[in-house]
Length: 237
Image (cartoon, rainbow, N blue to C red; front, top):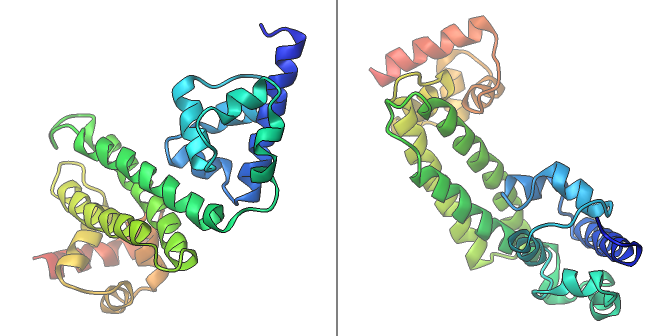
């Protein structure tokens, strides 16, 4: 339990972090997707109910581009030391720069999870590979937005390229494994045939939204599922 003074410090640091996060356009979900902190733990921290571990604190500070130790100093009463960061952002610490840094860190973590996947015949492989692929899809969306807002940052472009390359490789591996999903199979067949989403949709007589939904592991109508299966059989051979 914290004493009253410490509880005030925890609340102060949590509230300041929440303000900085919102200022930079970082959602609680983004931080969770980036494997920095889970949403329930982040909510508890921002409301002053708990204090993250040291490693998590360092990741949080990096995500909002605060110097190491900033949160601890704020907890101890040093809020003034970062008042400038909470106010008008400086050119080198805008939302695009924050997202670029956070994406780079997150990509490393998700790719590490991909490297740790078991053999395709392991009973846990289907669920684990789906989780990694879902994370890569989320990161791809975040990184693509960061490219548009970062004026062509080499770091974020490299991260986006790595995400897309690894996603294609991992989807192909998953498509060839027992228990492969329709989404994994159609994506791999479409990529091998060098077809766009619209081209594949036209070839099977479906809308592009159906292809996007299937490849993202979203449910599709049974009639559309049959069209997809027929397309896979025809094009995938």
